[in-house]
Image 1 (cartoon, one colour):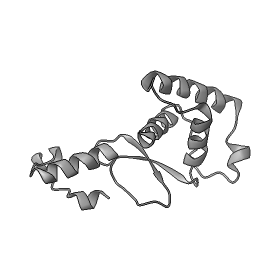
Image 2: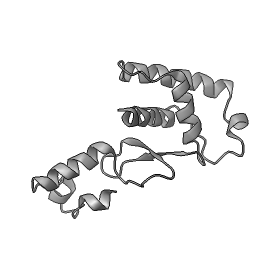
Image 3: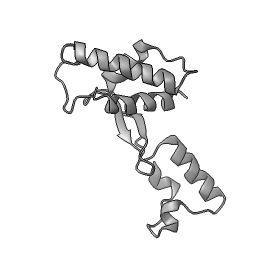
Image 4: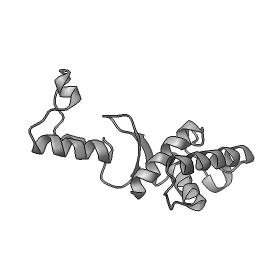
Amino acid sequence: MARMEAAVFAGLFRAFDLLPERPLRNRDLELPSVERGARLCDAFEMYRSLVPDSTMSMEQAILILTESVPGGDLLALRCTECGRAMVMERYGTPRKVCGSCFDDAIHRTAHGLTSTSERAGMGTSPPASLR
């Protein structure tokens, strides 16, 4: 659940233009600003309305934002299957798809089903290729 909630934050960070385009030399000095802080508060309010039962705090949102900056320990990416925001550890096992699409691919394979892209003639995507 925490990974999915972090992904919601990542999507909101992009939507509220909170992530800089380039790596920062010193995130602690260059990232904070009054304007970015106001946008972060707006993003956090939106997050709380989207995920009302969340236990994530503003401090955790700030940590996720700080570590999602280019060059940080987290990567804010898009799923190659559905386009949803997802968060990965920079040095963790790389994945091309979000947890939902990965689970769907496992289910489809286990039951001999095809994906939407396969039915559209776009080729197959075996689960091993999704990692």
